Image 1 (cartoon, rainbow, N blue to C red):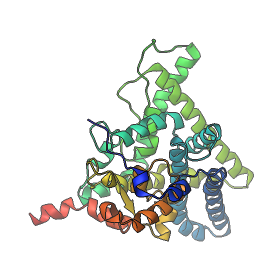
Image 2 (spheres, rainbow, N blue to C red):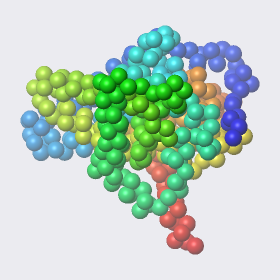
Image 3 (cartoon, helix red, strand yellow):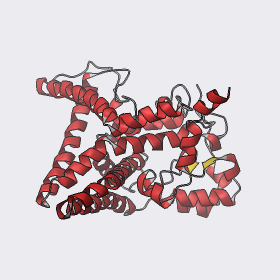
Length: 355
């Protein structure tokens, strides 16, 4: 299949506007990383304090805390995503450092993800798109969606993903200890980068399993475990294991659901794959509560991101504004809320009932 059509920014923006929205800040990447971890610390620490003060108050606060922490875990994934595009810092070395650190928190690898994700941009919603399986099943029935939500919130999705990843990492660790490697010319395995976009599916498996790919996965798992150990140490140093438990439970449950909703909103039930680049993705208008949970760090402006990959996440809202002034919103798929998207993608049941 041919590459998807690309937008031509010089025909859309004034030169000064394009320069503004493509400027990469030397400090915003650090701020976003700090912000994500600070929110996790405040929410987890505050909830732990409530547990120690009054167990009933702590119990009531736990559910919203898990969703807020899961939202920041998605935020860390978004930081890695932008770093994969080279947008977190003008210095490539610092950009990659920020992206790798953010990705390690949720078990992803920046470099593998970059290869995988750029393929998604080249072939959006075409057979070669590695993310096609995330949108192809939609629209679906509400019963099917409920089953997916249950799998996410009961940690079934998490354990399915991690069991495969850890099994592959074990193979890679043994290969490293034995000094084994692939034969020259073996195809590279990029599956270690798929953890960001595999909600509800295994996703970590690749068509080609290689020894070197397993070794990469072992390093990814090592970084992932190091972050979890760091969270545990900080939690215990603060006098309670509850923040660590909240972090782990959120990673295994609410993060999986939030990631699924984010993936659905980006491409499901759209006309992506057409010759018009303005149809390649969906932008979702997000309320303040939605930005706190399912749409951190401007991830809801996904149409703008597909149109202009060189625009950092913190300038996507400005790009959206400029596109509106230019009259381009009519060509874009824009949803009023995440609730409306979920209603749209579960419309199959209603259609069947009426037929």
